[in-house]
Length: 201
Image 1 (cartoon, rainbow, N blue to C red):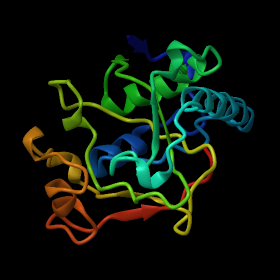
Image 2: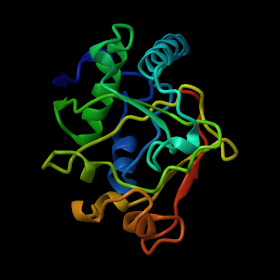
Image 3: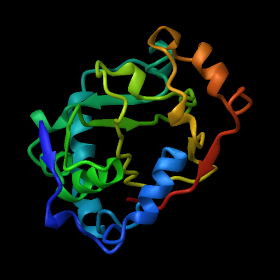
Image 4: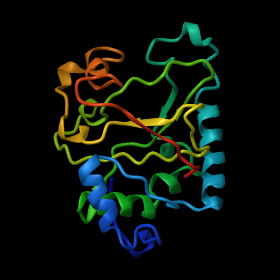
């Protein structure tokens, strides 16, 4: 589905986006402050909570009974299809417009939305790159991660490897906790993960 950059996509944080674009091109990630306001975070956070609870209500397995992949997080994709209150977030013009600006394009195609919920005692998510897992030939792809609750070093901060977007691994080298994690992990051959604290949003 095509999402175009619109005037509604402009915020104080993105109106002068040249610095954000420069950081994104250099590091492969960027923090866009205040992309969503407090009211939106509360409304969409509640909507996603309800959607995930509904999708996962029949899964009564313990953490130990789940696969290694599932022990990293509860994953629900394409919530926009059956959760009307999530749909405005999935197609939010400010999110799509910011993504388009960072990629230097007029519009973007949406692959999917997804909610990832960490369970208490779950596995650390293995270091990885998203794009090689997707059935998409083009490599100019982007992910918008929106932390509804924020994150700290103690509760599970997101980690990034600056510049790793220029080293996309082959699809045959993908596995959870396998070779890719060894290459891109905190002590991997390509550098050290940078862990960041994030406020909600």
